[in-house]
Every structure is written in C-alpha cells, then in structure tokens.
Image (cartoon, rainbow, N blue to C red; front, side, top):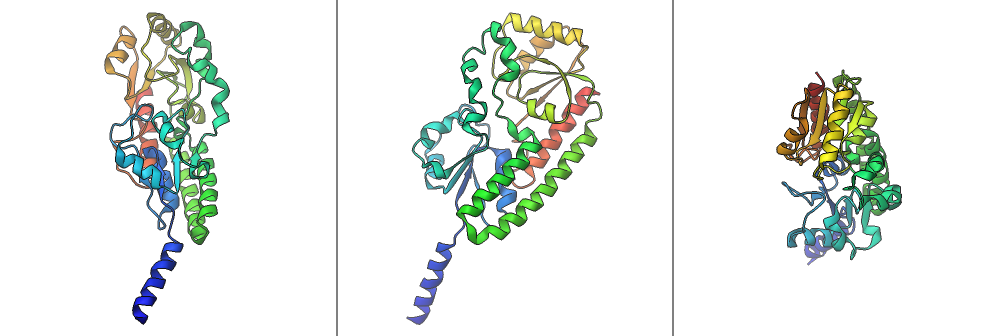
Length: 294
C-alpha cells in the first residue's frame, strides 16, 4: 500500500509539472521551436509533406492535435488560412502568432485587387508573411516565444532560457555564414513574387524586378511584357521563385531572355524535421541564390 501511494504521489507530481503540449503550423518554425524546447518537450508539426501553408484542410488527427494543445504557434491568420476555422474555437491565450494581427492588416484592402494590373504599384507593400526567411525576425520571435513558454511553464524556465541563448548564438553564426555565401549581392535580381522579400532585404540583394506579389498568381500578358522589359533594361542576371510556381509559367516568362532561374522550396521540406532543419533551409536558399547570380 505504501509503495502504491508513493507511486501515485509521484505520478501526480510529475503530471503537475509536465511540459506543455505545443503544436507548430509549418516546418521552419517547428525547427526553431524545437531548439527552444529541446530537453523539455517535443513540439508537434501540423503541416507535413506537400500540404500548402496557404490552402489546406485539416484532417481529424490534425484537428485533434490543435484541440489538445496548450499552445498553437502559427505565422498569421492570413498565412495559414486553413487553420482559421479551427482556431476560432480555441482560447486566445492558447494561440501564438509570429506576426501580430495589426502588423500588416492595414494593407488588406489591396489584397482583393492584386490580380488587376492597375494596382501593380502596391505590390511592394503587399503583406509578406514569409518572415522565417529573415533571421532578424526569427531572433525576435525566439525571444517572445521563450518569454511565453516561461510564463506557462515556470518549472522549466531555466532550460528554456539556456536553449534560447544557444539558439541566439546559432542564428548569429548562420547570419554571418550567409553573408559569406552571398558574394554577388550587387548583381541585379528578379523575384517572381515577394516570397523571398525578407531574405532579399536582410541580405541587401539588388532586386530590380518584382513580377507579382503572390507566388501562386497566374500572370497576365501585361505583367509578362512588363517583367520582360524590366529584366532586359536592368540586365538582370537571376530570377528566383518558389517551387510552387509551375515550370511552364517560368519558361513563358523567361523565353527569349538571357537569364538564369532558380526555384527554391521556401519551406525546406526536403530536409528532415528537427533542430537543424531551419539552418539547412536558410543555407540552401543562400547557396542557390548565389549560384544563380554567378
């Protein structure tokens, strides 16, 4: 009886200080969260395989993960739109968005017009939720998430803080390594969409042409002609796009032009999940862009 009582008390005490259940929407963010929670808890990845971060339908098993989570970490309601219906039933203190709701929402009035050519001048200002391609953004995110985790799991605060400091050193080293990789930063570059906009700005790449604001958008004849004219006049060396843009669309755009192209998986789904995934993704982006600019 004494042994049974001690075992029960042990289980109760362990349960009382159990680490929170975390669910993360997309792969690169999951990697960073895994760094912060290493040795404490393993976050669940919500979207796997080739599921689109913008358009997806949750399976029953995925809905169960969300419903049972202590904290759901996502980029923004306009990024993971397939989550909105499920998250509307989740308490606000169980949701953690990397981009605050009001940070880009002042531009939302333009989104419905993106397909119209007369609104091309707004493309540079269109909301860009691909913030994980900016190491600076992710350093800020790591700091805020660590504080949030400590607030809901005080017992593991020391471990979270240690992991955060370690991650900070790794991100600083990554930033320095990417600068060394990108040796042709002054060569003109064209972007199919704003998906890599944060990466381009942070690394001071010379973007001379932004073809459209959304990487899933089909191009009108007007936009194709306008893009070709800009690429020629700027003697642009490289066109980058996500792997979500069909090759046929890229071929139509670059036909008759002397320009290199590179398609990059912005999620890094070719790399295994875990603490190293984000770093492999970012180095891959840098290497592919640099090769394209050679």
